[in-house]
Amino acid sequence: MLTDAQIRKAKAESKPRKLSDGEGLFLFITKAGSKLWRLKYRFNGSEKLLSIGPYPSVSLADARQAKDDAKALLRAGKDPAIAKKLQKLAGEKRSAETFEAIAREWHALQKSQWVEKHAQDVLDSFEKEVFPHIGNSPIRELDVPEIMGVLRLIENRQAHETARRVRQRVSAVFVYAIASGRAAADPAAVVKGALAPLVKGRQPAITTLAEAQEIIRKVENEPAHPATKLAHRLLALTALRPGTLIATPWLEFNGVIDDVWQVPAARMKLKRKHKAESARDHLVPLSWQAREVIEALRTITGRGPLAFPNTRHSHKPMSENAIGYLLNRVGYHHKHVPHGWRSTFSTLMNERDPADKPVVDLMLAHIPKDKVEGAYNRALHLVRRKELAQIWADMLLEGMPPAVALLEGPRR
Image (cartoon, rainbow, N blue to C red):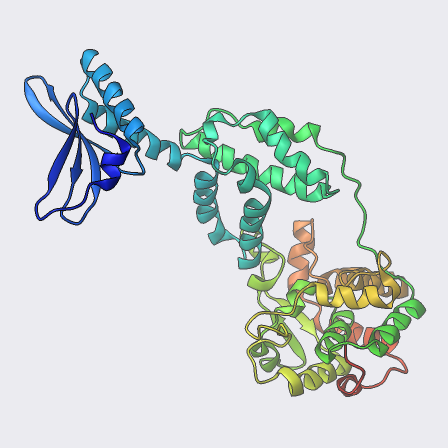
């Protein structure tokens, strides 16, 4: 019988050779010096060879155990080589049926009907919140307590809304697995009622004109990069969603016709799967103050592909947090967020003339719940939208310096 010392000292020779350990087990040493465990045995009268693995990954003790296991299979009338292949296939099947593998398969099928940003958000939520905990688990074996455990970790950060979104996405993966015969139940559906209650509230926003003007003054007097200040001013003027604004390519600003900026539906929050009337391009009338911001911005970022590039990576957009951090620094933490400009615009313009509400909603790219109203809005009210955009800009920026002044202000 072999010893570990013998195996370690064994060297390659000009021809391959074998070191026997008895009962058909031997170490095969190649001319290159590789040491491979093999077992010679007979099954149904034929001599066969079983590959066990390389030394030292497979130790002497492991090789002997593999030999004993093979002998037990032979006594039961089974071929060890066939049994090994079946075991490997079963392992490959289990690997293909893990939660992560099926979730990625589901995501690949779904993403064609989503805008790119939403598709990436869904995948990011899986990679951050789910895969590290249950990604390697066979989906068929996952149960309610395991799914609840993943969601509780999210809730413990007070991210209750995130927990609910993740539960919905996990549930969708289970439904897909059930439909494709790889799961029998959806434990994520069961836990829905056990999640912490969600306290709904609006994004923090200032809703008086004087306070809104004060925000503009404070932000523009704060040391910061000019592009961030210009982004904030344009955000306030257009009431766009922050994520849509900062990802704007110069191609869109260069293509403005008759003072109307056309934002493609693919860049809006709306998913492609919505009905056609909800997925049309969003038209943003530009006041002269908004056009002034764009021209000031052109002098510092106009040579690149993006209007609001990341300061470190020009091919990526500015971080959504950049404007938010600027607002926080001037005292608006939990009082006014970038998204809050939509509420500010909506509140003040609706108070000014309630009859303009359908037009204001259209300027905010809100989806009409009523199909008749949606059809009516096909008229776009573009003339009135232009008027309201200019009225809003005149109200908000009364007495403010021109946009070009922001290029010379204090930097951080």
